[in-house]
Image (cartoon, rainbow, N blue to C red; front, top):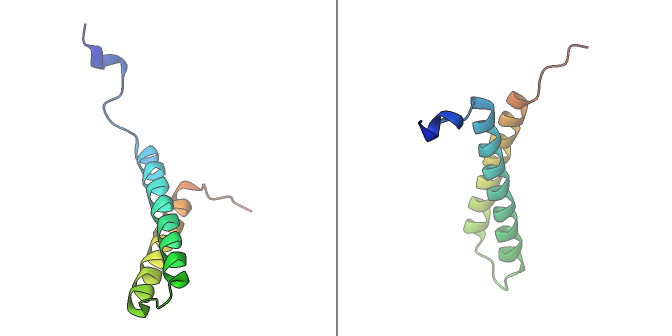
Length: 76
C-alpha cells in the first residue's frame, strides 16, 4: 500500500494564500522592528530608513490584497 495515498500531495490555493499571508505578516513585523531600531540609532541612515518604509508599505499592500481574496464578499 502506498503511504502517500492518505496524505494530500498539494495544498489547495486558499491554504497556500494563508501561508503566504503569515509569511508576509512576519516580514512586516520584522521590518517594523528594524525601522524602530534604526530610528533609535544615534545617527540613523535616512536613505535606508526610507527604503525600509517603502518595503514595509509594499508588504502591507500585498497583505491587504491577499486578505481581500480570502475574505468572502458579503452581499448587503
